[in-house]
Length: 211
Image (cartoon, rainbow, N blue to C red; front, side):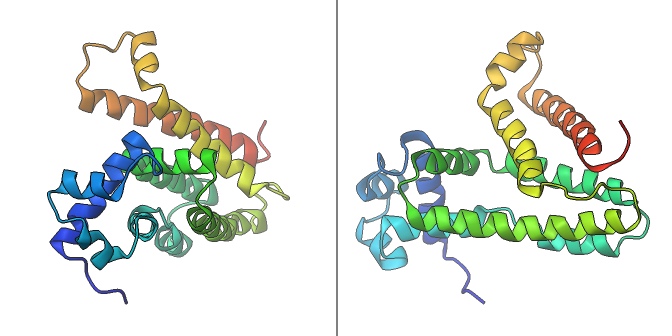
C-alpha cells in the first residue's frame, strides 16, 4: 500500500493538474508549478523526482478504475444485465464530470502522444476496464439478453467520446438550447441527465436484440 500523501504533495498535484489543463504538460514548467503553489521548486524533485513522475502520480490518483463497481454489480441480483450496464454508464459519466480538469489533460496527452509513460498507463487502465465490462456483458450473453461478439473498445469509445465532446462544447450546447439563464449547477444536472439517457439508448441498441 502506498503511503498517504502530505498536504504539500496534494497541493502540488492539484496545482499541476490545473496548470497542465490550461497550458499543457510541455507548456508548464516545474517553476510554474512551484510558484503557483507557493512552494520551493526543490520540493517537486524531493516529493516526485521529476515533472513526468508528478504527472504519473496525478494520473494514478485521478484515473477511473471501475473494478469495485463491477464487482458490486455482479453480486447484485436485484438488477437485470441491462440495468447493470446502465448503472455502469452513470458511473462513467459521473467520473468524467467530477474530473473535468483531469479529463482535459488526458484528452490532450492522447492527441499529442508525446509522453509514453502516460499513454502506457492509460492503455493499461483501458484494458483492465474493458475486461471488467466484459465480465458484465458475459452475464447478459449467458442469459440470452445480450448479443454475441460485442466490440467493447468501440462501445466504450461511444461513451467516453460522447461525454468528452459534450464537455468541450458546453457553451454551444447551452446557447443552442437557450439555457443561458440557468444556474451552472442546474445546467450540469440537465446535461448529465441528457447524457445518461442518450448513451443508455445507444447501449441498448448495441447490446440487446431489440431493434
